[in-house]
Length: 504
Image: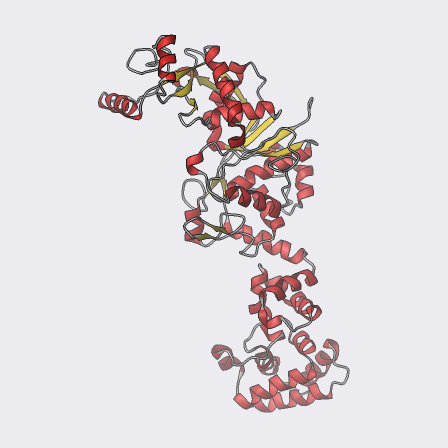
């Protein structure tokens, strides 16, 4: 790259950050770090009507949890600051005025009622109303293209509401290039004259993001596919200012697991998975699930998001953030939408579970289960080592390991019918003798003594091992029986077998 790569993630603080937004942030981050560049966070809060208190803080916390750290942003290394558009609003008016002075934009004084009447009139004729070259100077619309300069100035001085619209060129073919989608041709006659500056004194996204990207020296704009229809206008704005445009890359949509359309919160609610990185409490008190609170590891979330639209071209699926940086390439990002697979996200979490240190998992497990408060964390870690292969989340541990910490108070009915037969009490009484006779209480010695006795007496293994497991666990589940016996110790093992015998 001839100049230093600078990319930006520019979310609007209008609510929680959707995982689609996290994916966009991630791809920007990976691209920047791959090329030794800067990743900028900019808060695009020009839409004050939809602004939600706390949303910006949520966005920052989400990125931090995912490990996607920004080099510049609000309250951090603000060399091109401020990084909130609401704090830059005085800046944008001068650029809007420059476009007007150069004949690239104009004042429009049309009221909402007037525009509605125009739309209805077009609809009555079977047409679609577009505010552009076709009608902007015919006299029905009230703008500075048909008013004299004095009339325009008089309206402004009188306090009439106005917006500033971009003057889209007529009869031109615009040639655009997208890193992911290739070459695109646009007939400018189909474009409308977008509003650049609103009557409330705030710029629209279109003007603000162009000005900010230019002033912040952004070299690449990597954003969602939903912004593709705006690409023509943005390129035209760069042309109008005489600025060099950044390179553009529009990422594919994240599609819902089944059916058509992009992934939404409704899909998550319906199918039981989160679509936000962190739990979010809306202003009305509604709580939405988060990947963090649902027990996902941030590394797993980042890994599965990377595969929504990108692939490394190999069979490898597990990537650390550092490996993603090394392998990421926009050329390997697909045009087609990426189907979200809730089961695959769980698969990733399971894989990362296996990579965690048992002691770290034990600390997390202990923190969420009051029953473990007085139990040595090292014992908990040993227990987790025996069951984590069957776990996807830390929350799964209790169902898989409760018998390491507390004796069964009841026995599974179906398992009891299967395991308890005539003669089981006598067999279990003999097992108690064997356990008591095992002085060096190790897994190997228990296995040798009990299995040797079974073989020597030509007893079916199921007649011994099933009721033994039932006594220890309360059900026919869990890791190796001899591991359980070793973990809970001789006294507790005997107590549990005796309790079963009394219940037969």
